[in-house]
Image (cartoon, rainbow, N blue to C red; front, top):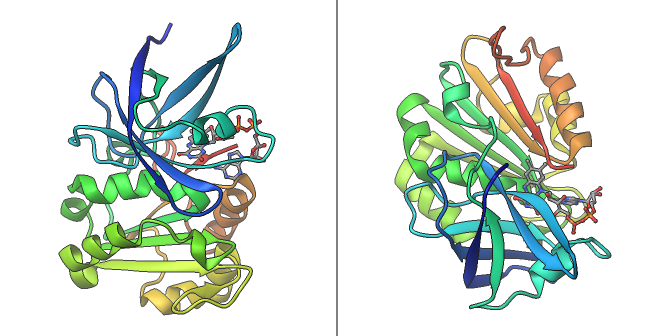
Length: 247
Ligand SMILES: Cc1cc2nc3c(=O)[nH]c(=O)nc-3n(C[C@H](O)[C@H](O)[C@H](O)COP(=O)(O)OP(=O)(O)OC[C@H]3O[C@@H](n4cnc5c(N)ncnc54)[C@H](O)[C@@H]3O)c2cc1C
Protein backbone atom coordinates (compact mmCIF):
# COMPACT_ATOMS: atom_id res chain seq x y z
CA UNK A 1 0.00 0.00 0.00
CA UNK A 2 1.34 3.41 -0.96
CA UNK A 3 2.12 5.65 2.02
CA UNK A 4 0.44 9.01 2.50
CA UNK A 5 2.27 11.90 4.09
CA UNK A 6 1.04 15.29 5.18
CA UNK A 7 2.11 18.23 3.08
CA UNK A 8 1.43 21.96 3.31
CA UNK A 9 0.66 24.53 0.67
CA UNK A 10 3.53 27.03 0.60
CA UNK A 11 2.39 29.05 -2.43
CA UNK A 12 -0.65 29.38 -4.66
CA UNK A 13 -0.80 30.88 -8.15
CA UNK A 14 -4.21 31.75 -9.63
CA UNK A 15 -3.80 31.88 -13.42
CA UNK A 16 -7.48 32.29 -14.40
CA UNK A 17 -10.86 31.79 -12.69
CA UNK A 18 -10.36 28.02 -12.85
CA UNK A 19 -6.64 27.38 -13.44
CA UNK A 20 -4.29 27.42 -10.46
CA UNK A 21 -0.99 25.98 -9.24
CA UNK A 22 -0.12 24.73 -5.78
CA UNK A 23 3.43 24.61 -4.46
CA UNK A 24 3.56 22.03 -1.71
CA UNK A 25 6.14 21.06 0.88
CA UNK A 26 6.01 17.34 1.71
CA UNK A 27 8.57 14.60 2.50
CA UNK A 28 8.25 12.55 -0.71
CA UNK A 29 10.42 9.74 -2.03
CA UNK A 30 12.65 10.61 -5.01
CA UNK A 31 10.83 10.83 -8.35
CA UNK A 32 11.59 11.46 -12.01
CA UNK A 33 10.62 14.38 -14.23
CA UNK A 34 7.36 13.53 -16.03
CA UNK A 35 5.90 11.47 -13.17
CA UNK A 36 2.77 12.03 -11.09
CA UNK A 37 1.63 11.36 -7.55
CA UNK A 38 -1.73 11.57 -5.78
CA UNK A 39 -3.15 14.41 -3.73
CA UNK A 40 -5.98 13.82 -1.30
CA UNK A 41 -8.24 15.56 1.18
CA UNK A 42 -10.36 13.95 3.88
CA UNK A 43 -14.04 14.76 3.43
CA UNK A 44 -15.82 13.35 6.50
CA UNK A 45 -14.97 9.62 6.62
CA UNK A 46 -13.78 9.57 3.01
CA UNK A 47 -10.39 10.30 1.53
CA UNK A 48 -10.86 11.79 -1.94
CA UNK A 49 -7.72 11.25 -4.00
CA UNK A 50 -6.70 12.07 -7.58
CA UNK A 51 -3.52 11.90 -9.69
CA UNK A 52 -1.47 15.07 -10.38
CA UNK A 53 1.75 15.50 -12.34
CA UNK A 54 4.77 17.34 -10.99
CA UNK A 55 5.54 20.60 -12.79
CA UNK A 56 8.84 21.16 -10.99
CA UNK A 57 12.11 19.38 -11.74
CA UNK A 58 12.84 16.65 -9.15
CA UNK A 59 15.77 18.68 -7.75
CA UNK A 60 13.45 21.44 -6.55
CA UNK A 61 12.89 21.86 -2.79
CA UNK A 62 9.09 21.93 -3.22
CA UNK A 63 6.52 20.06 -5.31
CA UNK A 64 4.40 21.99 -7.77
CA UNK A 65 1.09 20.94 -9.33
CA UNK A 66 -0.93 22.70 -12.05
CA UNK A 67 -4.67 22.15 -11.80
CA UNK A 68 -8.00 23.08 -13.27
CA UNK A 69 -11.02 23.38 -11.02
CA UNK A 70 -13.77 21.16 -12.43
CA UNK A 71 -17.20 22.64 -11.65
CA UNK A 72 -18.98 20.05 -9.49
CA UNK A 73 -15.80 17.92 -9.38
CA UNK A 74 -15.24 15.79 -6.29
CA UNK A 75 -11.78 17.03 -5.35
CA UNK A 76 -10.64 20.08 -7.35
CA UNK A 77 -13.05 22.66 -5.81
CA UNK A 78 -11.65 21.72 -2.37
CA UNK A 79 -8.04 21.82 -3.62
CA UNK A 80 -8.75 25.19 -5.18
CA UNK A 81 -9.98 26.51 -1.81
CA UNK A 82 -6.68 25.64 -0.07
CA UNK A 83 -4.70 28.64 1.19
CA UNK A 84 -1.02 29.00 2.05
CA UNK A 85 -0.33 26.97 5.22
CA UNK A 86 -3.22 24.55 4.73
CA UNK A 87 -2.49 20.81 4.98
CA UNK A 88 -3.22 18.15 2.36
CA UNK A 89 -2.28 14.50 1.88
CA UNK A 90 0.29 13.50 -0.72
CA UNK A 91 1.22 9.98 -1.78
CA UNK A 92 4.93 9.70 -1.05
CA UNK A 93 5.74 7.37 -3.97
CA UNK A 94 5.38 8.89 -7.45
CA UNK A 95 4.72 6.81 -10.53
CA UNK A 96 4.24 7.11 -14.32
CA UNK A 97 6.01 6.30 -17.56
CA UNK A 98 6.16 9.71 -19.24
CA UNK A 99 9.82 9.79 -18.29
CA UNK A 100 12.91 10.09 -20.46
CA UNK A 101 14.28 6.70 -19.42
CA UNK A 102 11.29 5.13 -21.21
CA UNK A 103 12.04 7.04 -24.44
CA UNK A 104 14.36 5.69 -27.16
CA UNK A 105 17.02 7.89 -28.73
CA UNK A 106 16.07 10.45 -31.37
CA UNK A 107 16.89 13.91 -32.66
CA UNK A 108 13.60 15.72 -31.98
CA UNK A 109 11.55 15.47 -28.80
CA UNK A 110 7.94 16.56 -29.39
CA UNK A 111 5.90 17.28 -26.25
CA UNK A 112 2.20 17.59 -27.18
CA UNK A 113 -0.21 18.66 -24.44
CA UNK A 114 -3.66 20.06 -23.74
CA UNK A 115 -4.69 22.15 -20.73
CA UNK A 116 -3.01 21.31 -17.44
CA UNK A 117 -1.10 18.45 -19.08
CA UNK A 118 1.66 20.88 -20.03
CA UNK A 119 2.82 20.33 -16.42
CA UNK A 120 4.86 17.12 -16.82
CA UNK A 121 6.52 18.55 -19.94
CA UNK A 122 7.65 21.64 -18.03
CA UNK A 123 9.13 19.26 -15.47
CA UNK A 124 10.96 17.36 -18.24
CA UNK A 125 12.28 20.57 -19.83
CA UNK A 126 13.46 22.19 -16.59
CA UNK A 127 15.10 18.98 -15.33
CA UNK A 128 17.80 19.47 -17.97
CA UNK A 129 18.19 15.91 -19.30
CA UNK A 130 16.04 16.42 -22.40
CA UNK A 131 18.43 19.02 -23.80
CA UNK A 132 21.34 16.60 -23.38
CA UNK A 133 19.57 13.76 -25.21
CA UNK A 134 17.75 15.67 -27.99
CA UNK A 135 18.79 18.37 -30.43
CA UNK A 136 15.33 19.92 -30.87
CA UNK A 137 12.70 20.27 -28.16
CA UNK A 138 9.18 21.10 -29.32
CA UNK A 139 6.63 22.11 -26.67
CA UNK A 140 3.07 22.22 -28.03
CA UNK A 141 0.22 23.40 -25.79
CA UNK A 142 -3.45 23.32 -26.81
CA UNK A 143 -6.01 25.41 -24.92
CA UNK A 144 -9.44 26.86 -25.64
CA UNK A 145 -8.74 30.52 -24.74
CA UNK A 146 -5.53 32.53 -24.86
CA UNK A 147 -5.66 33.35 -21.14
CA UNK A 148 -5.21 29.60 -20.46
CA UNK A 149 -1.63 29.72 -21.82
CA UNK A 150 -0.16 29.64 -18.30
CA UNK A 151 3.51 29.48 -17.30
CA UNK A 152 4.63 32.11 -19.84
CA UNK A 153 7.47 33.39 -17.57
CA UNK A 154 8.90 29.86 -17.22
CA UNK A 155 8.55 29.22 -20.96
CA UNK A 156 10.29 32.53 -21.72
CA UNK A 157 13.15 31.55 -19.37
CA UNK A 158 13.48 28.17 -21.10
CA UNK A 159 13.50 29.91 -24.49
CA UNK A 160 16.28 32.25 -23.48
CA UNK A 161 18.27 29.32 -22.07
CA UNK A 162 17.75 26.92 -25.01
CA UNK A 163 17.49 29.46 -27.86
CA UNK A 164 16.45 28.08 -31.24
CA UNK A 165 16.57 24.49 -29.94
CA UNK A 166 13.26 25.09 -28.11
CA UNK A 167 10.17 25.54 -30.26
CA UNK A 168 7.08 26.64 -28.34
CA UNK A 169 3.82 26.31 -30.25
CA UNK A 170 0.58 27.38 -28.54
CA UNK A 171 -2.75 26.31 -30.03
CA UNK A 172 -5.86 28.31 -29.14
CA UNK A 173 -9.06 26.70 -30.43
CA UNK A 174 -11.83 29.18 -29.55
CA UNK A 175 -10.46 32.62 -30.37
CA UNK A 176 -7.72 34.18 -32.49
CA UNK A 177 -4.57 34.73 -30.40
CA UNK A 178 -1.26 36.36 -31.34
CA UNK A 179 1.41 33.82 -32.39
CA UNK A 180 -0.90 30.90 -31.61
CA UNK A 181 -2.05 28.34 -34.14
CA UNK A 182 -5.81 28.04 -34.56
CA UNK A 183 -7.71 24.79 -34.16
CA UNK A 184 -6.50 21.49 -32.84
CA UNK A 185 -3.20 19.64 -32.71
CA UNK A 186 -4.13 16.46 -34.68
CA UNK A 187 -5.68 18.49 -37.52
CA UNK A 188 -2.50 20.55 -37.78
CA UNK A 189 -0.42 17.36 -38.00
CA UNK A 190 -2.72 15.97 -40.71
CA UNK A 191 -2.45 19.16 -42.77
CA UNK A 192 1.29 19.55 -42.14
CA UNK A 193 0.74 23.02 -40.63
CA UNK A 194 2.43 22.10 -37.33
CA UNK A 195 5.47 20.63 -39.07
CA UNK A 196 5.68 23.73 -41.28
CA UNK A 197 5.48 26.09 -38.29
CA UNK A 198 8.27 24.23 -36.47
CA UNK A 199 10.35 23.53 -39.58
CA UNK A 200 10.67 19.83 -38.74
CA UNK A 201 8.79 16.77 -39.97
CA UNK A 202 7.99 13.49 -38.24
CA UNK A 203 10.12 10.42 -38.98
CA UNK A 204 10.70 7.13 -37.14
CA UNK A 205 14.46 7.76 -37.12
CA UNK A 206 14.41 11.27 -35.72
CA UNK A 207 11.20 11.88 -33.78
CA UNK A 208 10.11 10.90 -30.29
CA UNK A 209 6.64 12.17 -29.37
CA UNK A 210 5.09 12.37 -25.92
CA UNK A 211 1.36 13.16 -25.75
CA UNK A 212 -0.49 14.10 -22.56
CA UNK A 213 -3.93 15.37 -21.62
CA UNK A 214 -7.48 15.13 -22.94
CA UNK A 215 -8.07 11.49 -24.01
CA UNK A 216 -9.79 12.54 -27.24
CA UNK A 217 -6.77 14.63 -28.25
CA UNK A 218 -4.41 11.81 -27.23
CA UNK A 219 -6.27 9.25 -29.36
CA UNK A 220 -6.67 11.54 -32.39
CA UNK A 221 -3.03 12.62 -32.21
CA UNK A 222 -1.83 9.02 -31.99
CA UNK A 223 -3.80 8.24 -35.16
CA UNK A 224 -2.40 11.30 -36.95
CA UNK A 225 1.16 10.30 -36.01
CA UNK A 226 0.62 6.70 -37.11
CA UNK A 227 -0.44 8.17 -40.48
CA UNK A 228 2.93 9.97 -40.50
CA UNK A 229 4.70 6.59 -40.17
CA UNK A 230 5.34 6.53 -36.40
CA UNK A 231 4.44 3.64 -34.07
CA UNK A 232 3.54 3.39 -30.38
CA UNK A 233 6.46 3.07 -28.01
CA UNK A 234 5.98 -0.10 -25.98
CA UNK A 235 8.55 -1.72 -23.71
CA UNK A 236 8.66 -4.89 -25.84
CA UNK A 237 8.50 -3.05 -29.17
CA UNK A 238 10.12 0.38 -28.98
CA UNK A 239 8.53 3.06 -31.16
CA UNK A 240 8.08 6.82 -31.20
CA UNK A 241 4.68 7.59 -29.59
CA UNK A 242 4.29 7.62 -25.78
CA UNK A 243 1.16 8.93 -24.10
CA UNK A 244 -0.73 9.56 -20.87
CA UNK A 245 -4.47 10.24 -20.54
CA UNK A 246 -5.62 12.61 -17.80
CA UNK A 247 -9.09 11.02 -17.61
C1 LIG B 1 -1.80 10.25 -14.59
C2 LIG B 1 -2.70 11.43 -14.36
C3 LIG B 1 -2.14 12.68 -14.09
C4 LIG B 1 -2.98 13.79 -13.89
N1 LIG B 1 -2.42 15.00 -13.66
C5 LIG B 1 -3.22 16.11 -13.56
C6 LIG B 1 -2.65 17.40 -13.39
O1 LIG B 1 -1.42 17.56 -13.28
N2 LIG B 1 -3.50 18.47 -13.33
C7 LIG B 1 -4.87 18.31 -13.44
O2 LIG B 1 -5.60 19.33 -13.40
N3 LIG B 1 -5.43 17.10 -13.58
C8 LIG B 1 -4.64 16.00 -13.62
N4 LIG B 1 -5.21 14.76 -13.74
C9 LIG B 1 -6.69 14.64 -13.60
C10 LIG B 1 -7.03 14.51 -12.08
O3 LIG B 1 -6.54 13.29 -11.58
C11 LIG B 1 -8.55 14.59 -11.80
O4 LIG B 1 -9.23 13.70 -12.63
C12 LIG B 1 -9.10 16.00 -11.98
O5 LIG B 1 -8.39 16.92 -11.15
C13 LIG B 1 -10.59 16.07 -11.66
O6 LIG B 1 -10.82 15.79 -10.29
P1 LIG B 1 -12.23 16.09 -9.61
O7 LIG B 1 -12.36 15.12 -8.46
O8 LIG B 1 -12.40 17.51 -9.26
O9 LIG B 1 -13.29 15.77 -10.76
P2 LIG B 1 -14.17 14.44 -10.99
O10 LIG B 1 -15.40 14.54 -10.14
O11 LIG B 1 -13.31 13.22 -10.78
O12 LIG B 1 -14.55 14.65 -12.52
C14 LIG B 1 -13.72 14.08 -13.52
C15 LIG B 1 -14.02 14.73 -14.87
O13 LIG B 1 -13.38 15.99 -14.92
C16 LIG B 1 -12.83 16.20 -16.22
N5 LIG B 1 -11.36 16.38 -16.06
C17 LIG B 1 -10.51 15.67 -15.26
N6 LIG B 1 -9.26 16.17 -15.34
C18 LIG B 1 -9.30 17.22 -16.18
C19 LIG B 1 -8.31 18.11 -16.64
N7 LIG B 1 -7.03 18.05 -16.22
N8 LIG B 1 -8.69 19.07 -17.53
C20 LIG B 1 -10.00 19.16 -17.95
N9 LIG B 1 -10.97 18.33 -17.54
C21 LIG B 1 -10.63 17.36 -16.66
C22 LIG B 1 -13.17 14.98 -17.05
O14 LIG B 1 -14.36 15.26 -17.75
C23 LIG B 1 -13.42 13.93 -16.02
O15 LIG B 1 -14.30 12.93 -16.47
C24 LIG B 1 -4.39 13.63 -13.94
C25 LIG B 1 -4.93 12.36 -14.18
C26 LIG B 1 -4.11 11.29 -14.39
C27 LIG B 1 -4.74 9.93 -14.67
